[in-house]
Image 1 (cartoon, rainbow over the protein chains, first blue to last red):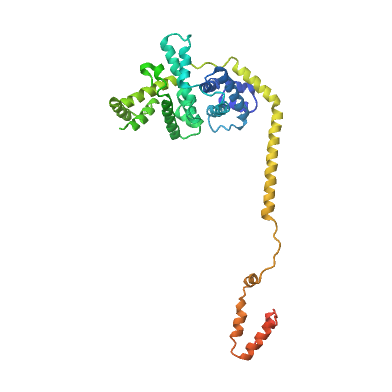
Image 2: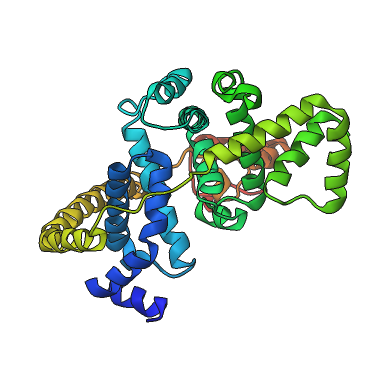
Amino acid sequence: MDEKELIRRSQAGDGEAFGVLVERYKGKVFSLAYGFTRDRAAADDLAQEVFIKAYLSLPRFQAKSEFGTWLYRVAVNHIKDFLRKNRERLKEIPLQEAGDRVLASSDLGPEEQRLQEGRREIVQAALARLPEKYRVILTLRDMDGFSYEDISRILKLSPGTVDSRLHRARRKLREKLTGHLGRQGGEHGL
Amino acid sequence: MDCKKAERFLLRSLDGKLDPEKKTLLQTHLEKCPSCQRKDRDYRMILSLVRPQTVPEPLPYFKERLLAKLEEKGKTAPALLWVKWAHRAVAFSLAAFLLFGAGILFFRPQEPRELSQTEKFLLQDENPLGEAGSILDQQEAEDRNMMLIFASVGDRDVSRRYRP
């Protein structure tokens, strides 16, 4: 069925039509939430809340943008609220500790794989420490692979701002990581 | 090319957004700048570590659980709607009350006020010195005196004044 028709029916309260939209977009919304939480259960909860919010706001959706763009905007705003409310609970662990935790775990198999996981943990911990606007743009671009144009529409930013903010975010992330990946990184470390 | 510009090009090249000409310039710079070579390596390594290897699927029965929640919400929706409208009604009443109060303050009818002598002269377009001037202009002393006497008795009706 045509997406416009599905939206029109959902706006009229047709749960079945909304179910089709959920099937279409659940992967991307879940992946977006997972990028921020790195926890499957938390990401699942967040994705459910995003769809509930979207369903309740659907009567106000006027098709000025694509449904997907609108839905991702709802998702990003909801996830930002979640991160703000849980800032204390999600207080990040020290960067080096993040890597050590993985290196200490014995069930990861070969040495190189453990090193790589350690580096990955450190990068995620550094990402969580960035200011929200940089974290959001890096997650959208570098984790979820949204194009510059999509990010510009989702965050309602000009393409120039997307470009400069993304570059600043990558610089900040590198600054945070300097000196931290060395131990795990061996000769390829930072 | 300086290192600052090289870093800008380098960041753009991560997204494949660097045109061939600039790519060549960056390459030339990288060949002779160990500091920028390190930056290039760092950025590429971080990017590969940020990108998730695999993203898990949502938990089972995602759609079914969601639709059940929506159905549950639907049952409580009328109550929620009422609360929402009650909040709006309170806000609207408060705003209307404030507007009404402001209206009364700014647009209340003004009581008629007694005009001062100067205002009267101005409104009637009269020159208060005009009469005195015409008395002093008289050539005959007798006329002047008579006019002064009439003016001093305070007869406000100018038509009944003495005129030579």
